[in-house]
Image 1 (tube, rainbow, N blue to C red):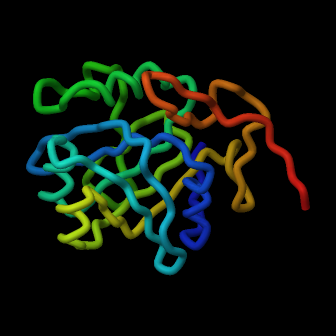
Image 2 (cartoon, rainbow, N blue to C red):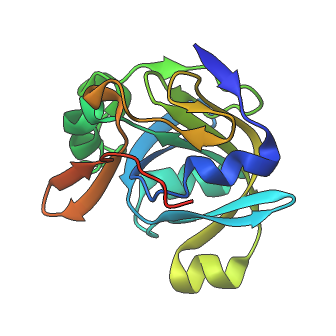
Length: 185
């Protein structure tokens, strides 16, 4: 079951550097792609950064709608993450082709990817220079949710099910999953 995440703590959903699925929609069309370059940027209002290449269909839909969702997939979805990161949504419906299911967002028209362990719904903060020169998009987080079994009291807890650990892309189709948690404090 999903639980709302306090927006002031939404950055913690990405602070451990997971691969994300970026979903977008515009004019009755939808798409999803994998992205390894996403990170928190600011606390109040909460903002994130994501790099989206000019050639992608996801970017086309993001620019048309002014919004996107960062979906945090888990190890159980690794094969689907590779598939949606390797093909273009201009050629096929990547949700249908990959077996990913669409879920309704809380505040945006873009779809969520069902089964992910966290979601950050974002409105694009227009920065045309950064978008054109660096493919860098800033998103203001307007809603955030995470699996309550894995994220509570503002922190991730990946100790139980290895299939539910977040993915971290290291190139060439290779990933690692979040490992054992420990604290020095």
